[in-house]
Image 1 (spheres, one colour):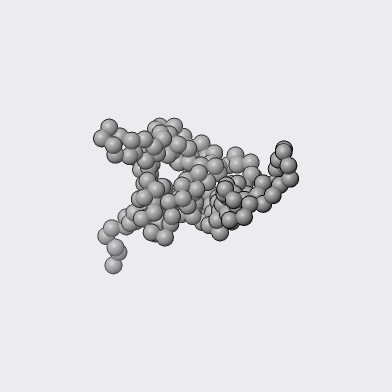
Image 2 (cartoon, rainbow, N blue to C red):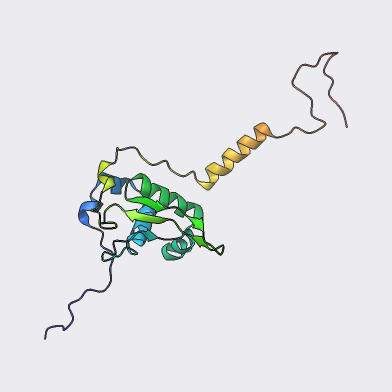
Length: 169
């Protein structure tokens, strides 16, 4: 017996040709997942710009995704040429934030054909985000060098008018 309805359920098409490109292979797994979430919001009939707030992306990708990671992935997929921003984030009339809108370069946008900017990727790698430990170590090193030494610390700068005598409490 033949099935009556041969229509596929909704899905996100990621073509093999796109996934074989050097730019796709260079992207992090998080950026690829975020791109799939953005592409799932694209409507071929409308040829629309897509949007996804960092909060909604965190929910969609799993609550373990930190806001800083998601912001980094948005920059990464734009760096590799998979998206281009068409309108930046801003506050609406009543103080409600509006997420940036993106054009997927792999798809048509507003009646114009796809640009596929990722095919023109130069080979330059997107800078890795420092780990929490590296950020902590940087902060400790930076502030240890630049912090105030307090009122009772001896100066290492030569003073005029006599020898340097350490203060005692």
